[in-house]
Each structure stands twice: as structure tokens, then as C-alpha cells.
Image 1 (cartoon, helix red, strand yellow):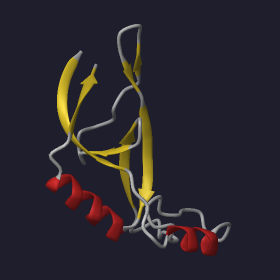
Image 2 (cartoon, rainbow, N blue to C red):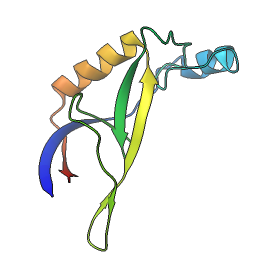
Image 3 (spheres, rainbow, N blue to C red):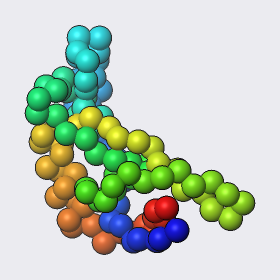
Image 4 (cartoon, rainbow, N blue to C red):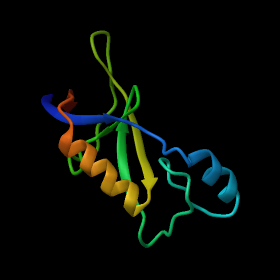
Length: 105
């Protein structure tokens, strides 16, 4: 296995998430995990997360699940986000000094 230090940021929700999520619930196929807005499948993006709740660097590839007696690496999958939230995630990741060591097979 190959270890790689990647930048991370805590997953977040905007202050209007609850209002948006309730407003669009059941009306659309995709909703942004960050702001709760209805997403256009043609313009939406995806952000990858890892437990215990961090968005990870864009473009690192799929993080594998590795659970052994000595190691616990649990990917949380990919989440749909809108273009504006995607820009915010990228901006926060660029400014982040927090890293996590992730292992790839």
C-alpha cells in the first residue's frame, strides 16, 4: 500500500441548508449536500469524503476502504454539490493546512 498525505476540510452546510433542503425535498433528483439546493445534472459536481466527515482533495482518485486490525480507512463516497459549493470546497481545500494520510492499494 502506498500512503499519501492529502488536504482535507470538514464537511459543511450553509446557513440556509435547512430551508433549501425542505423547500426542494421530493421535487428533484439531486440536492446539494452543502446548501440543499436543487441541482441541475448537467452542471452539478461531485466531492469525495472520508470518515469521520471530511471533504478531500479534488482529483486524487477513489479512496479505498481498508479495515484491518491495525488500520481503519473508511471512505464516505461521493456527494453531489452545486457549482458554487464546489468552488467553495476547492477554495477551502486550497487554503487548508490540515492533512490526512490516506492509503491506496
